[in-house]
View (spheres, rainbow, N blue to C red):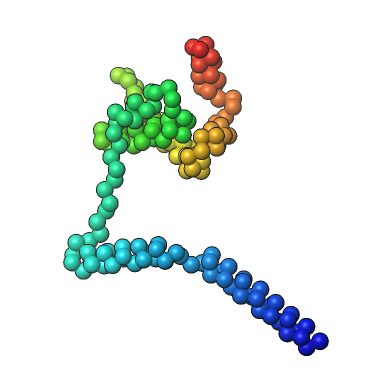
Length: 165
């Protein structure tokens, strides 16, 4: 009888240890990541002490011509197309002050509503790209779920695409 009680205690103790180990695994950071963060902190502290301030990492500049070529190539997935379209839009806004998602023309001046809708389109595309994590089928499904099926503009574009084939 005493042996059975001791074995039950051991089993409970082992399960407690296993639970504690699992909890530690969930709440701890790998040593490599910790060391990298510690090194980054050391560099930041040194730069602040020397009066240099924090240095920003340089943003990768988008090659406008490469984006254009990729968008207009026939072998491009929806994910690549939308990623390039967003990159091209952001690069144009940053480099030339032009938003490619806004209507343009000699007698056309974008309104606040146009700007809001252009940003909403960009936000939806970026959100779908983030959620899809590079998977084209997931991206297409997410995007289709966010587009109104009875949108007159969408229906017109689909009819035009069918006629052009």
